[in-house]
Every structure is written in C-alpha cells, then in structure tokens.
Amino acid sequence: MTVRIDQTKCIGSGQCVLAAPDVFDQSDDDGLGIVVIAEPPAELLPGVRDAVDRCPAQVVTLEE
Image 1 (cartoon, rainbow, N blue to C red):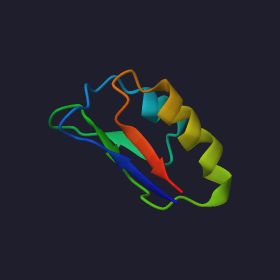
Image 2 (cartoon, rainbow, N blue to C red):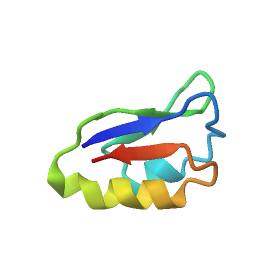
Image 3 (cartoon, rainbow, N blue to C red):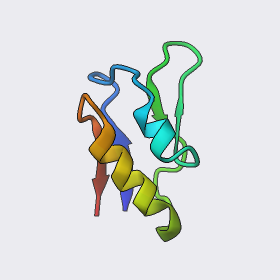
Image 4 (tube, helix red, strand yellow):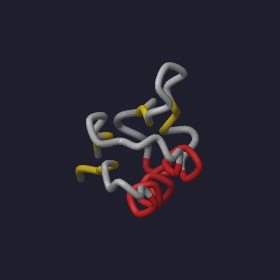
C-alpha cells in the first residue's frame, strides 16, 4: 500500500494530518500536506483511509 498527496492540487486544509498524524504532516514552508510514511503498516491504514475520505481537495490517495 502506497500513500500519495498530489502537491499540485493540495489546499493545505490539514484534514489528512488530523486523520492520520503518524502518516501525514504539513510543510512548514507552505502548509501543504506531506506524506511521512509512504508505505504505512496495516495498523495505520484505517487512519489513512479516513484521510482519503476527509480530504476536501481529494488529493490523498492510497494505492492498494
């Protein structure tokens, strides 16, 4: 499973960080979401799926 954020379309809402703080963070430079763990372990996947659902710009993806 691989997590990605489309940086060109991210609006920096931070919903991904709220849903899965171990997997996502926000850049100090521009506030956009960044992936900290691109291939998270199984126990973090529910939060990642929540982040995918929460993202208002729909730029967070989980490739299974």
